[in-house]
Length: 297
Image (cartoon, rainbow, N blue to C red; front, side, top):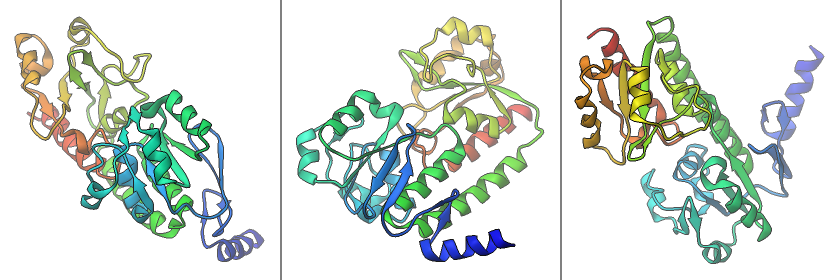
């Protein structure tokens, strides 16, 4: 009883109580994906995002108005296209970034890489590093962006609604017959994703099993022979655009492969599966339908 009273008082003082921490209007202290504590005297009002999915998640957090710069392909939602572009997720113009004078730079750990992040910090930028290895991490990042920019209540509402939708999807796909899936990122070099990647979580949510979950690196380059050896029930490819990549049909030269023999070669547009945003649930719903077709041809 005393705990509930104390929590109520704390929530009134802070405005929001999230993840067991109290965030008042100022200052803000929050831990990023590296385990580093980032401190802001006041909520960030000039933010540069170094990945398209980070841009999208800021809008989901109700904080799109704080963005003053982004990288190439930051094209969702529509208003994101008007943001000044400072390069791409692998290479940015530090001069352009300095000119924007952001009070916070939000980076993608595994995408931008340690070298870029360390360079940004050496130039005096406050850098908050994000990573998503599970579906729940997407909602967690949206909530953190809300905390960082003073839109925590709006961010929490959208995150909670999305998590409810995710929970319903997971419940509907429990106890289904497992389907072995080879997720193909690209054809040359032939590349997939291991069990630590977010997309592996998507596959498992739909009752599938990532055929290369045991790979050591996050996005391994593999051989055709290894795919033939693991003989997946389905092959799901992303590619670069909305249309089905032509190279997906290259597997048809291996008629003994289960995925080919049963006609289970599928495509999911990359924007709704490879971007770590709330839209990934659209890609997940599509994959769930595809795997159900494998079970019930």
